[in-house]
Length: 109
Length: 114
Image 1: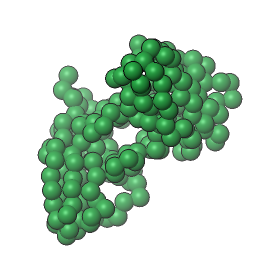
Image 2 (image 1 turned 60 degrees about the horizontal axis):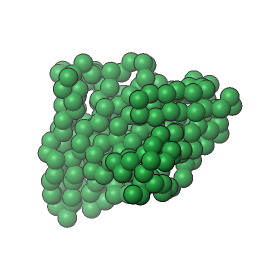
Image 3 (image 1 turned 135 degrees about the horizontal axis):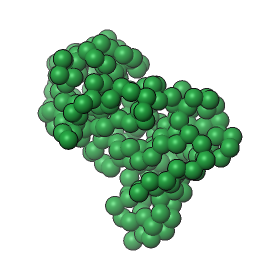
Image 4 (image 1 turned 60 degrees about the vertical axis):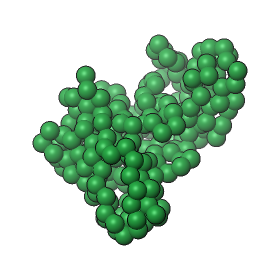
């Protein structure tokens, strides 16, 4: 499973767009990139998954450059309720899901 | 659609005791994974069960064991509890297919070992 590196923490303000970048230099050909969100004392929740280019859903967008060695989770117009830990994971869809330390996002009023 | 439920939500044990945590998987899911999450850390993979068989294990000692039942619910057993076992234990279910590999997590069982 490819190792991922993401910032330990980030601060932003309500209404801003937040971009969290994840590095995964050793990503394999069959690996997908998946992001989870976790609130305190709750289980992680799936946000988005992609393989290449751009994926968008009702919650977020995921940008993946052609070399796939990094990815960026974009959260549009964040609110206080988006304060959480965000995990970037890389692996095949049949792989066991392994979490890193994640990025603590703190949204300020 | 019934989500993943875990019990108990909180419990306190002393060193050396044994604990059993329970998980009911989401309807239609045949795969259950267990994770341990210490305070301030990401979830650590313990093991996964697929159709009642262990299907992968993380770096945890044998005193961490599990079961999956025919209805796909699951148990995590931890023997000879140590202080470092204090953590949030998360159960996640999935379909076991390669569709998205998405895991659906329960709210967790918070274990405190004194």
